[in-house]
Length: 142
Image 1 (spheres, rainbow, N blue to C red):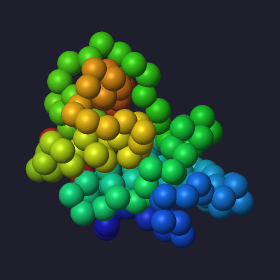
Image 2: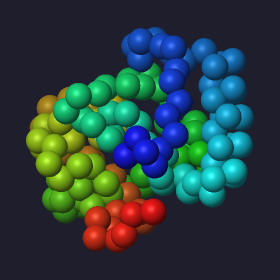
Image 3: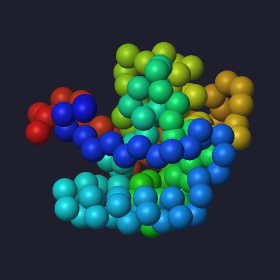
């Protein structure tokens, strides 16, 4: 992944809100990178999405919804549920990651206030993302 990705480091523990000037600069940087390299919003992921067993950044206080409203990321809409884990993996969470790690990473990004086992809301949100942005793991890599 590192040979085909662009990483942006933000200074923040993830437990405090990200300052407005930092978010503004991030949005400007992302917009330029995404336009220059034709990166679609659903291809923007967190470290915790890519490696849920090892990474937790940018953390629960990062404003993913703000990025989605600016077209720089995606945000789920409730859909008919199903199996949370299957949908999360179809959206792109690593198939080798443990179910609890996938749930933790998913919630860090989309429901940081939620706790307990995967529920109907997790399943409905993951189902929407999997339907709109499925990952084709058999497709050739660039």
